Amino acid sequence: MNKKEIDLSLTRVERRLFLKNSSLFALGATAAIGLAAPGRALAGKMKMSETDDLAILNVALGLEYQAIAAYQVGAESGLLQKPVLDVAVKFQGHHKAHADVLAGTIEKLGGKPVMAMRAENYQFPVTQLKEQADVLRFAAGLEKGAASAYLGAVPQFSNRELARAAASILGDETMHWAILLNALGEDPVPAAFIA
Image 1 (spheres, rainbow, N blue to C red):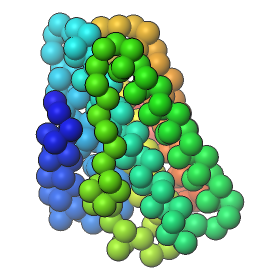
Image 2: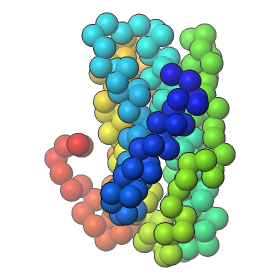
Image 3: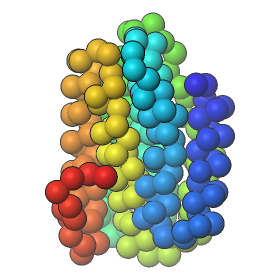
Image 4: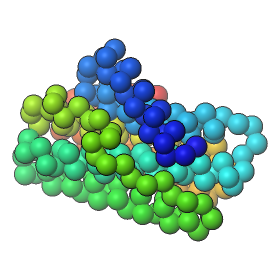
């Protein structure tokens, strides 16, 4: 799957679900899951190969770029109080580290990493971000969507070391999601399993 196909898939999913449900949390999760959907469809094949692993890694890299851009929008919104802004910048740094490792791994395996889109191409709901809670809710949705995407990808890798690395990133995405829910005053562990 090439970058253009991923971009088009993300845009279609975001628009359809934005119209259906204007909740910032749902939109954040949908955006992340929408970008990961092509990777999950590919991951559903019975026999996986290194080529399939590369495709899944590129979808994951696209998710990381999306998260980096989303945290930048949040940081530049002027809506985040200093301690929350510090945490958001830290989380963005985690996503940058994930992206660096994923891009390097893709290159090491002989693949070509997808490129990051421009922030405006993600069509984030910036006009709906009116206060700090809106930014946190949107970020929490993205983190939940990323955790779900990694959860779907982990068992699909043919290379077990890649699965292990993805599981490590899954843990980080889940921690981000829990911390953001806590900052919103919501239950940071709403269920025993990630859906």
